[in-house]
Length: 537
Image (tube, rainbow, N blue to C red; front, side):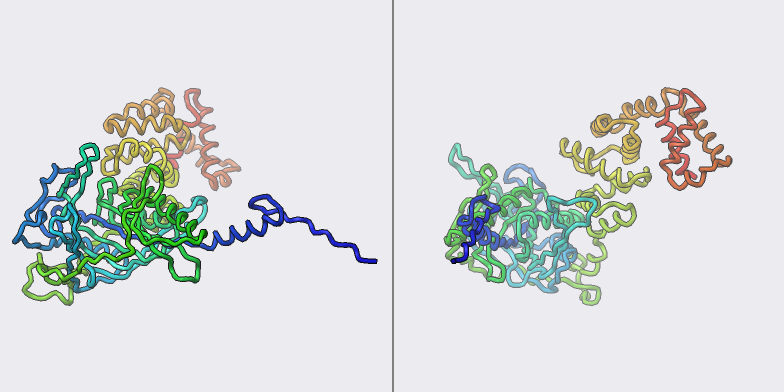
């Protein structure tokens, strides 16, 4: 008798919920999709914070009248010659030092020829073969969706290929209504640092994490203001897709990304687009694309299959650029001709990584909070002043600064250098909110009023008087609290040692004792005064 046949149950695919025939096809599809990895490298163009341009004395102030900040050299008048701006060189060297780069003691300038309406000379002065600095790296945290102050941050290291000095081009203004293109040369000749990274990033999230860390460094050392809305910090992204352990794929460049959000969205879209093409066995075209904010798509600008000949040549009107140290400074040179790397190293302020470590060590802040405070210009200094005035709860102050204060400042487009409210007043408002003397709604109301009219403290004074003292004499309340504290210290309460081990329980006990002494004493008010008295001991 034949053995009975074994009947196999059909397996259910966890992706498409269909049976076995679809399971194998779907499993293969998802495995293939997951094999493709994005590879991202960035080219950052950072305008150097200087009063004059890289090769001329024309003003660099943003927002000036059209074509009103243009020297004869910027407009490419015949016979005009470039003169290097020492400030731009020093900013480039300090940036290289902050990014752990090797500064070349001798660098040279080249001409890069291409013809466009906003480039009057028909070439750009840049550095190709011997740039200002090479190599380097930057370690930065990656902010994933599950980031939490309760866990340490995840870090990555991005390599740098080089930093070069070059001049910016002018600005083209396209009027679609009148079908005209207008040229503003105010920006022409402004000093740029081009920072080129290695292809070490894998997604838009990693690219944004790197840029935020870089912006923190550049603003800290005052090399660039990094205002993307003004065009002083622009990003080009080189993106490709490949399978691990295989050569890199065909590179696509996305130009002129002018916001952090655009950088992330453009990179993520481009990785997805290239992956879909490769899964369909189609070829990636090596082209230059732009990012359309409205649709979220990248759009082709020009084909790069045929390499453009820029006809690079050494810049004949500029000598080699020399950087010295204390041991190699030649005699007889005027100080205006000397860029001393040792002096610039000593002038570097504490960098964001050092300041973050200080906040974690001195104030017990989580790594996440310390990072967010450090990357915002001026926030670290303001935070330290608040904590010095109100040292009771540094972490709570950090939460209120990152939340309500920053929210109101962003609403008003304020930076910390523009805030006139005193750190002491902000700290007092935080204390009152922390002790639940006033609600978060009242806290925001007070901050909004202090930001609007810093000398006015009427609202905060009103809350302090009503909530803390019950409209009674504050000196009388302080006298009662001091009396309760003295009696506790001098008495022989059996729970005295246990209460002293936990300040919160001690404050609750003492405040209840103060409330028994007078019907006018509020429990929360007494608790605040007692906490201040204990901190003075």
